[in-house]
Image (cartoon, rainbow, N blue to C red; front, side, top):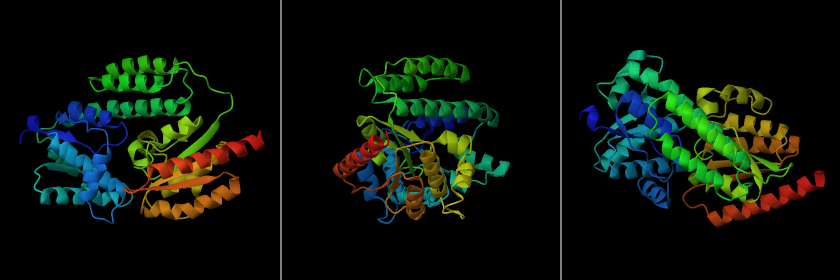
Length: 357
């Protein structure tokens, strides 16, 4: 297989595919397949081919891989993390190969990131004829794409639902993403981001001076991938709630704020709980201190670190007088049940907020 034939793909996660596309095409010089948005079919495909005991993000990844293979991908990729995510790649690849699929697999968990030689050898899985110079040039632009995506989504998260014309944010942001897909360099990214930053900020709002602010915390995948939490941020926006979330690639990867959050959480969690659990606690404390009227924890069913964080979050709730609502998601979670609990949560938070006013 020559590098010209390679079609790479990461599992779908929020809108970071546009950053993955840039580093693959401009750095590794291979074609990148932006995976289709996650649907119920994605989850069903993943559930049928995954062990029963694994957490739902694994099932989403499996479903994404199967759909990507159907669309012509032949080099699959997997990130790594501080939990069972480190074992996802090996198991994903084994299951898919047992099913008869042929592909290359780049597993970040298998790389010794302190060894330039090992990095180079694993990068060659993606393109045997790669140029490390081109990859080095593409990395800063890739990071900037991530920062712009997170900046825009933070702004939208704080203001969606308050547009004078419903849907303005979605339409403008999707227009931006369509153009982002085809940028060739950092100069084009800068011009495009400046244009759409202004467009987003110029959207007319009917936003009250005082809004009900809610913080979202949770495991790395479920809190960031909208389908996996049933588009909870949009549901909260329908109630006129302003949503805050710290967990994203910019904060966790580029600026490495995990240690800062763990330090904030130290009063409640002296030891590492695993994965993003300590960050979840630190974020909840930060949101409580900043005046959020409520906090919502979202996690995949069976995520042990986030389960361990739950009683600690109750202590945070008690000490700061802020209600915390917990959601666990898997393939059997009822969307109606989620909406009903969110509505009850909103009624409670609104009543508390009114009493304090």
